[in-house]
Image (cartoon, rainbow, N blue to C red; front, side, top):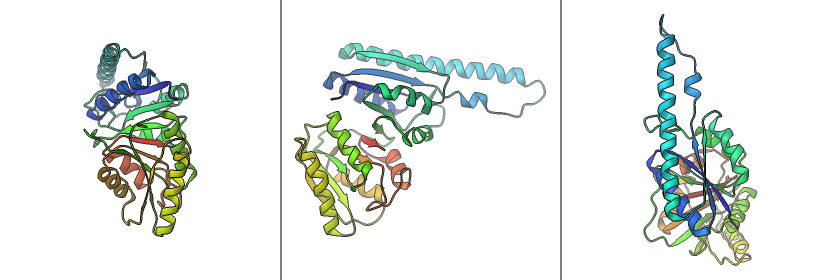
Length: 281
């Protein structure tokens, strides 16, 4: 049963969507919520050619940038604190400005059951280019499952089900286990999607995943696919066509999906999935 959620705050549109979703999730599940505001100060430490007498200018410029980032982070924390109060959600807030973003996630994630984050992250202010490489670094060895919101995520008004991608790999099996443990969207019907060039193998995999969920009181419909083409587009299309409220997946193994973690499939889903994406490596 989920008890604590870690929310990474940011100023992008999908980050605001993630914030609202996490608050409602905490209220629905009666969870404690930790809001983490990350600042990536690495640009301030990078070497830069300066003209004679330019050092003082750079020092003043960097101090101004850092203060602006701090003010923005504090504003995000104040905003979520007000919302949590209105929803009667227990909230702890953390401002992390000294370490690398992925290191801060490694430090805080083990104290929580779920991490909620947007890939449209700016780590300071909205004018900075968004960068999700720090998320990729964290996901190489995550302590907890991650609920991701991409720049293309739109919450459906009338969701019909949860779609769970299953390829028989250990990562996919762990993703199903985390879905059961967390209790996310258990009020909706479930469809286990398996894709393989062999129809019988696709059916076997889909039934295997559905059987695991049924054993935990979550009957699910196995859906066998023999689609060809981009794996990411197959999954996005499956989630869209079934009216999914949530897409669940692990890191792809070497069988039906033929992708390793952070192959093209995972990166594309992180950037363009239309629904919240529950991932676990």
